[in-house]
Amino acid sequence: MIISNKDELTEQVVRVMQQTKDARLREILVALVRHLHQFVRDVNLTEEEFRSAAKLIVALGQQTNDSHNEVVLMAGSLGVSSLVCLLNNGDSGNTETNASLLGPFWRLNSPPTKNGGTILRSDTPGPALFMSATVVDKTGAAIEGAEVDVWHSSPVGLYENQDPEQAEMNLRGKFITDREGRFWFRSVLPAGYPIPTTGVVGQLLDAQDRHPFRPAHVHALIFKPGFKTLISQVYVDGTDYLESDVQFGVTHALIGGFVKHDEPHPSERVGTPWYSIDYKFVMEAGEAKLPLAPIK
Image (cartoon, rainbow, N blue to C red; front, side, top):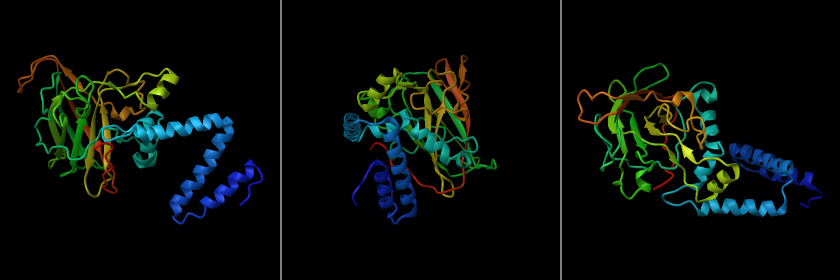
């Protein structure tokens, strides 16, 4: 095909994309070409800007490794991760949902932990946290036997794979819901933290005078055949950056109801203050499928 002008170019490329055999892939590629070409026209992209953009895309891959995923970090910093999440959950974006971002720090094979146990696997100073939660379906019926992966940052804002002071799999655990759909455990209150800024995402934030912080939260990934895998983050009430999360992940449904206690715990020997939370996760019917782990 010989191209006569810029308008004909787009239509020629679209015709080639339409040869894609898989119907869904064809739909995606045709839309991608139309929107991408229109974007280039809208901003009148220069040749120098194109080369810079290509360099940045290459850098996203180069900066991704077994313990860090710059591509996922960028998707969150542009709001793409949250948009995909909200479009695909809560009755296709029509109702409130517990679903949230997977984030770049989920790992496979968290240690199995009994309900009531602790996910502290090394000395981790900080206010004690006692979390209990119920997993239900859309009718409110308890879901028994769901696998619940839990992970969160330390009180200094680091995940264990980032921090040589923490033991392997510290602040990570896998629970099984009981007949009432409940699971519960002991930990420490997580802190908000800055996302890594040494790569392309850091350049984006610098260009926009944005801070790099995420509000304090606890992650959960809930798996049960017959239900769509629920990926969630539960945010600590009143924590910093709820209104300005660098990853655009906070929704009203995800602010958790963490309670601060200044009196002694009724049964555990912990210092004050300590915190508790009782939260409800609602799963939708669908395919039980685990995502790819961002890190090994």
